Amino acid sequence: MISKEGFSFSFDEKACEKCGGKCCTGESGNIFVSKEELKILRQYLGLDEQEFALKFLKKVGFKMSFKEVKFEDGYACIFFDQVKRNCKIYEYRPSQCRTFPFWKYYKNHKEELEKECIGICYL
Image (cartoon, rainbow, N blue to C red; front, side):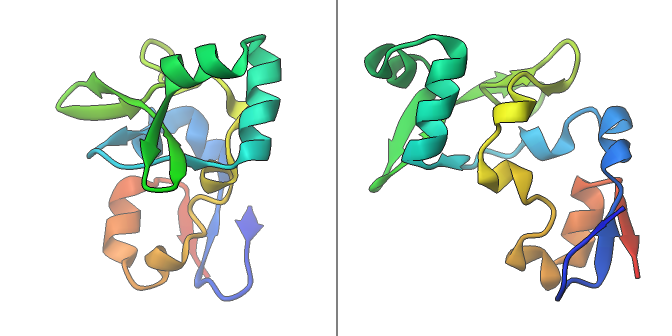
């Protein structure tokens, strides 16, 4: 179980194995990624900057976000494996994904979090 100060819940990361990727799928959204995270991921995938950007990124204001693809009744992150229903780049996922479900937003939106994540346990 993972806990974080200031949050009224903990997270069982083993639940991810049974979840099917709820945090990676659903409504359209942005998966922001830093320049350093992009560099590490590009190196892992063996792609140059331009090829990687064309294939996987979209610009949102002054930030870069992973693209999405149509999936079931909504969307999925471009790095979501639709067959295995998990993240293809789990070890290289950006901090936005690494910090889920401990987002400030969920402090005041617990019902939404419960729908999004089966690994939540209240303290």
